[in-house]
Amino acid sequence: MRILIVSQDMAFAPSLKEVLRSGGDKVDLVSPGMGAVNLGLCGEYGLAFLDDFLAETPALDILERWRREDVALPVIVLASDDNWRFVSASLDMGADQVISRPFELSYCNAMLRATLRRSCWTADAVA
Image (cartoon, rainbow, N blue to C red):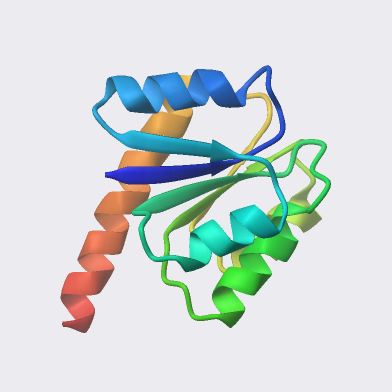
């Protein structure tokens, strides 16, 4: 599967990329901004991680644009803390999951698997 990670946290994002790649996935890592928006719109990804940590373009702005364009891409938002207003806003905006810092990389990988399972079940129910 092809996964998009949108993050400018260079202490964390490359580690997540390697964990996902070790599982056999193809992973692209990009900084927040219009490039990230356009990649999400292209339809080539099976899942995206949106990291809100120190972002020049907030994750919710990117997510809002994807949902406005009817992109059905499963999205996991990585929150910079456990601000419950941000978590609620992310879910209301269309995030499938929100993971608040601090967290372990294995937890991100488990959430990815759970999100993909749920998206398959939803697609099967609609079909």
